[in-house]
Image (tube, rainbow, N blue to C red; front, side, top):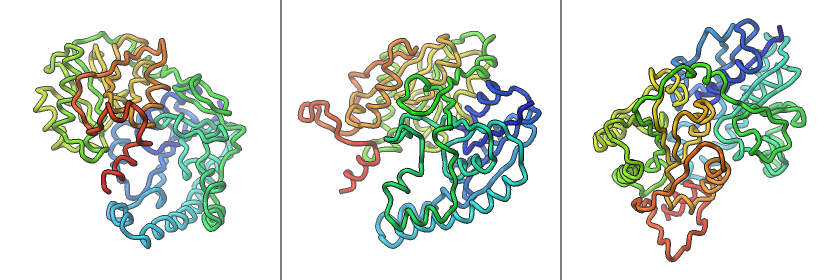
Length: 393
């Protein structure tokens, strides 16, 4: 039997790791899971993954703690105001990359004979994937691949370092020793196969493993709301405005608030905010630190509706449920001012026959205080980050 390795960095990649395991292998024997995460664990990844990793699937689970890809909160805040800290933060990362490469090389040397490796696209993950020297490498989803494909048509994080970085940056990047598997030979295992403009060969992730887990479940009366907590992403948007927006969504769909299960963003939303929102709406919530796709597999009954402003989890749930759950993308009209969201809308939510009902919440309260008559619906910002920068001025 061919030996496989799967490399993940968080709960998002683990959800697709199980699907890769089921699609290509399906046996515990010769299946190794590598978890590559920063030592600082900023998003409580260890707790979440300990909750969801099914050890019945993996012959071995290997945890790899790295120094790379983590900046303390104090550094993130202070570097905005200090050129020195910005410089320090950037070039410190090259040193951490250098140290992590040596650590990963040592770990990889202990594992031989993998035919296939599945990996996320982060630098440390891809380095481990390359050092395991597989016959073939697949990158798995972590969000939407459309955001990660470069002008070359490939998912290649190194392009900005090699081609668009400074001379010093290019030199230091090469000095780290970070390796990449040959891009021409890398394939994608993705739910977005067929909608990607890429040079990679793609294999469709049909979510068959989770389909198997829910195939005998009946549809219940609950309504699952998957939060896109705009009040935490965009400065000036208040939690009360977000609550009003949700009320408009539920009223438009004639939803009984008492049947709503609010699914918070596990990283962005805290317990206090979730309590405030659910108390105001008179609904319940499910804040278990596991992906919403896995939550659905653990419910006794399937929800009759799943609603979200723009969560790509809707795409995954559509695949899992085979159109048995009614899915709604409840779009705020001001999202059209953000290029990143417009591209998401066009590539995921407005595709004919994709099983997701797209509708604009026309009487939603203004969140960004943008005068629609003056701006005439044109895109004004790349993303919420650019909005925040301009809001600070």
